Length: 335
Figure (cartoon, rainbow, N blue to C red):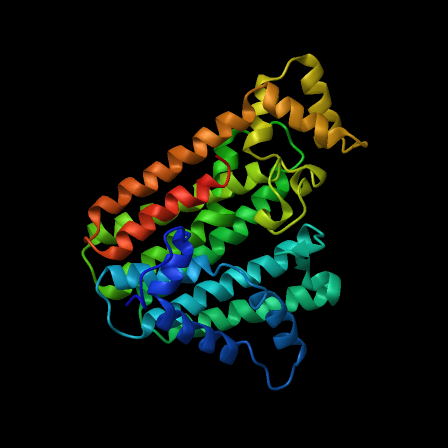
């Protein structure tokens, strides 16, 4: 239950955190317990660097919120929220190795501070821990949902490898990548909260659809912020996606609308990787000129609207309004 009224200008995620403070405290205790290792001190060192780096913990909050919204009063939602956070943290450790990133959440990445081997192996450890936690709930359906999400995440990352640097990547493939790398865990987080509460299938489906649409809106907004957000907003260096030659929705829209000169530019910087000083600024100019940024922004808002509409099928509850407000917030970052 809420500890008190949130500040008038509170962000929805802060309102969620306040309303679920006691549950989240229990999740944090469980996370610290399960990321420990008797024989390999490197594991808690690497894990703590990322887990305690001030992340929003949005995904475990979604699990807790979905369970409470559906009237759940047991304890398994704590384990499921920790499971979701472990899966997320494992994917971040692996992603930073794949992307050769140097910054995450405003801090040096684990692979930079330690090495790639440590990041990969600790990520594997956290995946294993996540499966131990979900087994403890005793729900085969929950295990099926989270196992499928883990496989979808990995599949999405591999698809992104093949789609990156390829300007033939279309919006359908982009959406598959986004559903894999981001939306799969959002939708699993909300769906398992409903499943563990034992609510009717229409409510389970509604919370799945909410998480799916929210995750897509969230990722499109993140991709937009790479072309104009601050490093503080996105937790990495602005322009990283451009430098890594990732074909995201803004680039897909800009390339489709470009003239011959514009297409030649995108082919040089994305497909050939021949990037020079000033190219990021020129890319920004082309994204604006072709209307690609506005088009991608409209798409993010459309998915946020889908998430809000999905909530109409779930019980009336103070948390429902907060989840609805969250859909506005994830895209307001690019408004």
